[in-house]
View 1 (cartoon, rainbow, N blue to C red):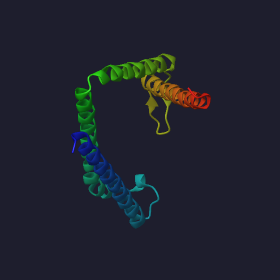
View 2 (cartoon, rainbow, N blue to C red):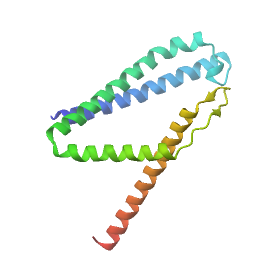
View 3 (cartoon, rainbow, N blue to C red):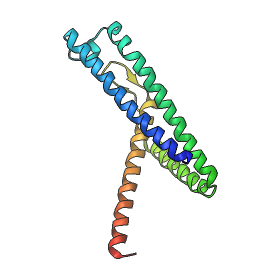
View 4 (tube, rainbow, N blue to C red):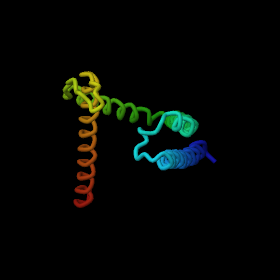
Length: 157
């Protein structure tokens, strides 16, 4: 069995385990809320929540890091086997960085008061705006490519 296929199964298993842990953690919080007569986890005392959630939270982070490592190993092993794909990968990365750069240039940075009384800095506001612009550009490009693909299939090219 190839390493990429093994990593695919490992990533799938870890994803399922992460979903199970999320379910267990949310049920634990729900039970604590019911036992203490509150409707929001923020109203629970920290000494009740921390022992129930901390081990699961740590395990979730460990799984997240393992998934990222497995994904990177899979990507780099595939690129090592096919050096010709490296050029296409670099083109994609540069195109993505250009889209993010355009979003950053178009974004406004304005200090913004938040609901909890803190203030989002101008730089933070600009980064949020850049992310939104990049998302909109990439979504528009994806929709446009699907539309173009559909038209090409109708024409028969």
